[in-house]
Length: 180
Image (cartoon, rainbow, N blue to C red):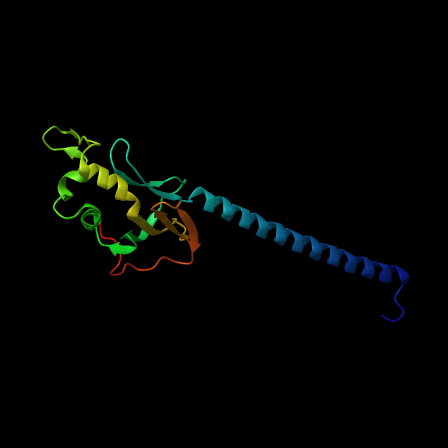
């Protein structure tokens, strides 16, 4: 303004300064709010994070175990079980490849129907010895997700330690998928 009084010019300069400070404070508040939302999302992810483990054992009997060691449920999307690197469709086919056909009913049965108790395995039995030796031929590839839709693939079995990798999404079941 032409002919503005010095006090008016100082007031105008102070109000610009106040506006810049207010804008900066608002921007910082927005950044803090965004970071808080990010941290909360990470906490929610950790609260529902499943961690699958697959292993085999021979104590007290020969068995394969899939366990969720995480804090959230694992939604299993796709499973591929292999024997000697070749996909199999179910546990009967696993057993057939490991010990041959005709032995499927007694090896994996968890209970002795006559006794109504866990099936006893005789470690001197040639079938037990073969199953124990060959259980390392079985590997799995399990794609699973958390309740938030984040996906991982577990590759485990055999003589190598299992590894879990994050994936964008799980594949749809296919002809090589395990059917149980």
